[in-house]
Image 1 (cartoon, one colour):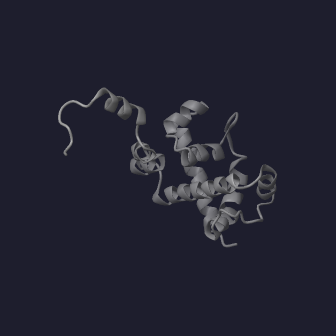
Image 2: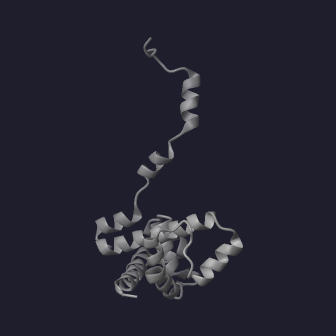
Image 3: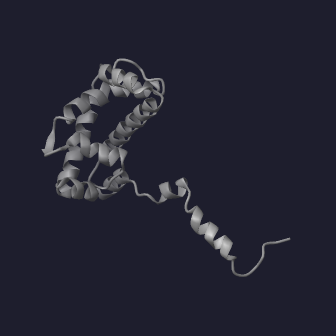
Amino acid sequence: MGRKRGRPSRAEVRFAEHVGPTAQTVAKLECDALLGLVERGDLSVDQERAGREINDVWEALERSMARTSTIELMRITASHRELPDAMSHAIARRLHQCHQPWASREIEKTLAPGVTRYGIVWRLCNLNWPPAFIAANTGLNERAVVRALRDSLDVYLDFSKKEY
């Protein structure tokens, strides 16, 4: 028996409207802010790679947070000496070699009241917010956001080139 021809039933239409798109479909439709900046010529490929590495470290930290009690997480993030269980050795090396020194420096760079370069990078790399949206939410203009992002990613690249 084949599929029935003609107009779908009301129940079929309601079910299709209720289900909505899958998570994979939503992810495919979402634009990649870092890639868009590279395509526009605002970021270099190395800066994009640095942004992806920063995001990888954040994702690994988030995974380790999900499996750790709040007290234990506070101890780990305060010391930055222990390897969280959910983190690979390569990511842990990036955390200690690049991310921690970079973050401690960038969190001090204030662009506007309550806005740091670290916050700009976090919004763009981790939350995938486009620069125009970040500018609208921070009171900065889009060029200042892109400039802050570029400068911050250059600092991260400098830390990644150092040998520890």
